[in-house]
Image (cartoon, rainbow, N blue to C red; front, side, top):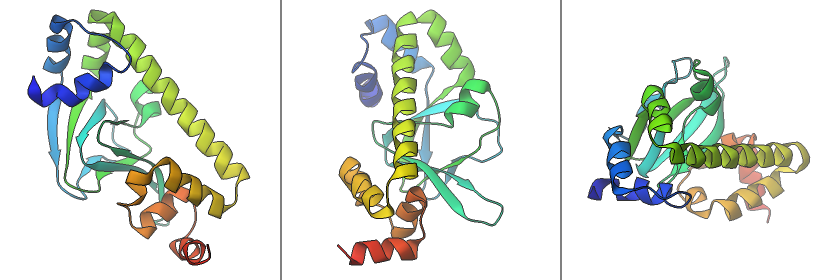
Amino acid sequence: MKEFRGILANLEKHIQLTPEERKTFVSQLHHVQLQKQEVLLEQAAFCDAIYFVNEGMLRAYSLAEDGKEHTVMFAISDWWITDVFAFVKEQKSAVNIEALVPSSVFRLSKSDYEHLLVQIPNLERFFRILMQNAYIREQRRSMENLSLPAKEKYEIFKTRYPEISKQLNQKQIASYLGITPEFLSMIRNNP
């Protein structure tokens, strides 16, 4: 159970599980080790799992027809990641999810997820909270993207995600903010 300490602690921020429920939950997890730039989920592939980042950092992004990348989110240790819409609706993913550094994740398949929600009703509360928090984060980000200038969005990003911002290159941050790397460079050079 030692290797599952992180994910169990993540669950127990919101719910309490019995020792038997913990065993049942971890028995449905599949460990995935990723190399840097390895793709965990491909855009247009069927999204049939949700992932917990045990170690490392991942990025979810879409690739436009012109080859331009649009970063949707990052996920570091102790965070969950998937294409939520595709996962819930059992559809093809609108994003790629790749490892930005060597990473370790736990994969929970959609079928195992559904089975666990019935078997351990408390998990329904946990995943409801997880989805609510994801919705709040995305709504806040959408509002900021619509109403704030790029410099403010960059400052908010650095403040909100200091751990992440230090590990990313300029192109990745610019892709998340919806600006060009050159414009981000101008923002950084004009405090």
